[in-house]
Image (cartoon, rainbow, N blue to C red; front, top):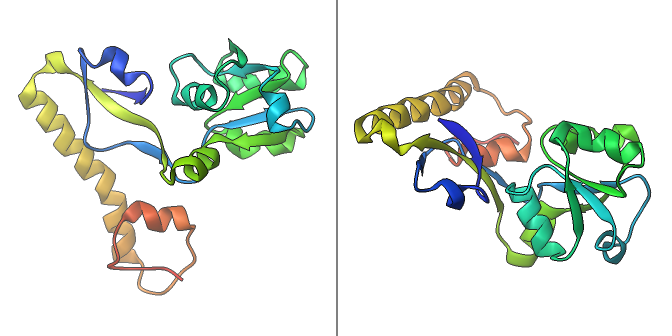
Length: 184
């Protein structure tokens, strides 16, 4: 089993099946274009952008926003330092870079997840878990059941332990997809 970008999945679908649990979507947030100085949306389409990979959903979203933008692949955890060093005019950041870029003094030019939601009204599908088809239907089903149980156990435990109203981020509440309990 592996995590895979939704953009990459069509290229390996003959060997891998998507798992029914363990996906990631950005509901109004997602990969971000950052730069060491403020850039307009028109300007960012004319500069060289460091990207985390050619088959990442982040890069697909960037290409939908700016089809002709010049890019170069850089390991995702090296994009912020490369932009700070001036090797690139901008960077397309994912994962923890989305949470830490501002501490480096970088400017967010565009959140592609928000751009996608504004454009389509939908969350941006980012990635999923996939499993090799050669494992066979029985093994795949067994792994899928265990993954589903493992991913639901923390939420079930949290619901049982919460007996008073609390303050949780909206994303946590949406992630539970239930109205049987709510935090205010």
